[in-house]
Length: 219
Image 1: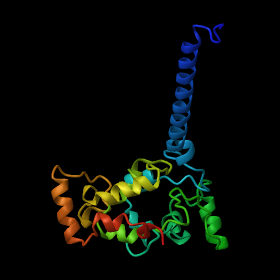
Image 2: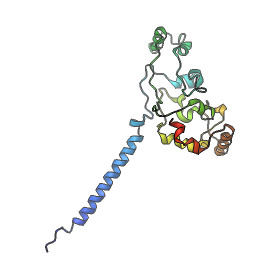
Image 3: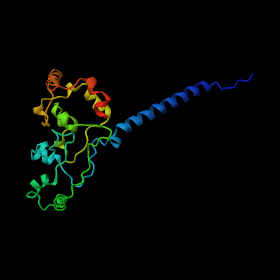
Image 4: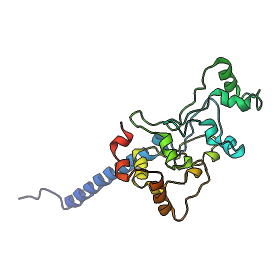
């Protein structure tokens, strides 16, 4: 009976299988990298705004506290954006005729709010409460990074579910004293686990099982 396959057939078959496996692995790797990259997550991508507002200038250079503009961050699920009146408190006197601040004056004259582009925009099916995080000792910079170094505001975290869940599984790693919540330069101490667990008890933070329950964020 004549030989049906050439002697090299086994080598070709093994090589083909290896190529297929590598292609599948590569496709998965590319998909994962793309899903975690800035093209999908917008991490470190500053969206265009009607005014190129600089947190670096206002926070670091001028020393303005977060709560001056984000007035509801301690009491509401929404941090809040400053009304035009807040901007005009300074800009009716400072840069009062600058082209850069013209949209502020237009807003003040017409009564129409400035149409800011949200940087941290969660899906509608996610429930997030700023006030509960602030009052449980989670600092602004934990989620928003060093905004005092941002000439234009951008995300420093993906806002993906696994990012949130990682914190909810081990909240003691991220809790700080309430007095330090708005301190952007706060550094976690060497005994953070001991401090964090003590603050969890003091602030009545729920256990990891409750914090990772689906209902906590999806209501």
